[in-house]
Length: 269
Image 1 (cartoon, one colour):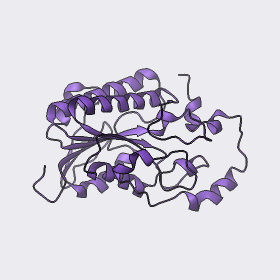
Image 2: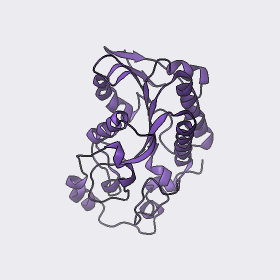
Image 3: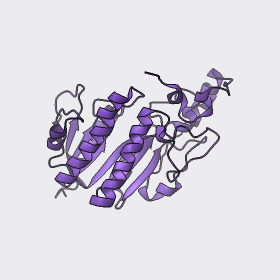
């Protein structure tokens, strides 16, 4: 625990060179004494109060070193799209195990885990899903994130490492299509979600969907209200433009039937 005004002395952000990592990097730095950023991509030079460390998630020794002295982790690292299973295994399954085992060895007390809406992508778009319902992954990527959630639950039950699993919807500057009227998560709401997950006094093992305060919803976060996430943005201002671009939907298209969208059709590889 930091002796300063910050809740965390050293916070680790993995996947810091990725799309959402680049968004969160400057937003997390003011909330900790030291922000350690990691990725295999280009991270640039360390800013004031930052540490830059490159580590492959499948390299157990490197990840063990990466977690040294870390109070909490925002874990965005790994593969974030549907890819061949052998690639997914290395980054998202072995990598997740290496991260949690390193956290256990170093006494890291909380992890905010980037899961995905694709953990439940094979629910239909005319269903409402909450975090307590059975998973229905829509691909190898979704399977890997379901594994990550189960791993996180195990490490909480056995070792007491708290985790909030963020089933992130579609986080972009603005929604791109009609599906994202339901799944959109603004960058400001992403920051609010991550900080609520870090700042809530007691989270245990929690699962929460990452979405803004959209009018059109498939996900019910009532079981995760204790996390204290209150989105303030909405996809509604974009509705008219998006609907005019997609006047008709093919109701026989699996990407329209299921919540996972195009992920339910990806592959074979």
